[in-house]
Amino acid sequence: MRNIAEITSKKTIISTAYHLKEVLTPNNDFLRLKKKDKLLKYLLEEIEKLGDNVKHGETGPLLLEKSIFNEFPEYKKYLTPTEFIGSINYYDYEDFLIPSSQLIKKLNIPKIFGFHIWNTMFRENKINLETINNGFYYDLKEAILTSKNSQEYFNKLKNIFNLNNC
Image (cartoon, rainbow, N blue to C red; front, side, top):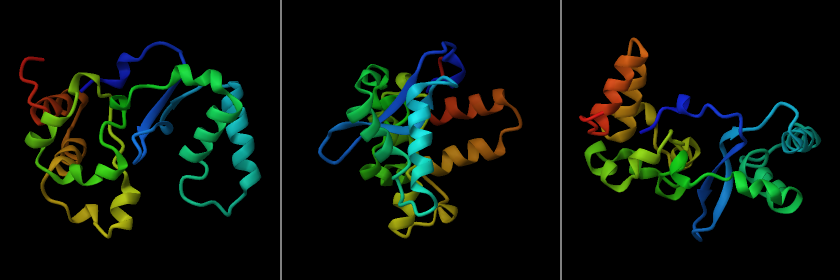
């Protein structure tokens, strides 16, 4: 697991995720766009046009995908590998519930900067994350909530990811 602080460049970054058809698409899990970026300006204008009657994803991944593929194809070069943030796909959201020791065997840990938890998937499938008391999600949550400082947090992550030699 990598520290997001490693990303020191000012370059544009757009995370990705897979759809069921294994089609790689832009996702707004993580966006780094410059303050006056033309894509950012376009996204904000489109969101403003939608007003308050917005469906889930409409101002996020759906708008971003449409914008990049239809209006700004030059931004495709800024798409990250899925491991960056979306190493667990939305349709595999239940992987967050399996023991950490099992899940980390499936992940490319050195390339991961973070995780998208896919809260909507849990909510739509009537799984209350507040009642989860074991598994990968629980381990991450406990590391975040119980760490007193960044070093303690890092040590807990090393333990979760079994990174004893870091």
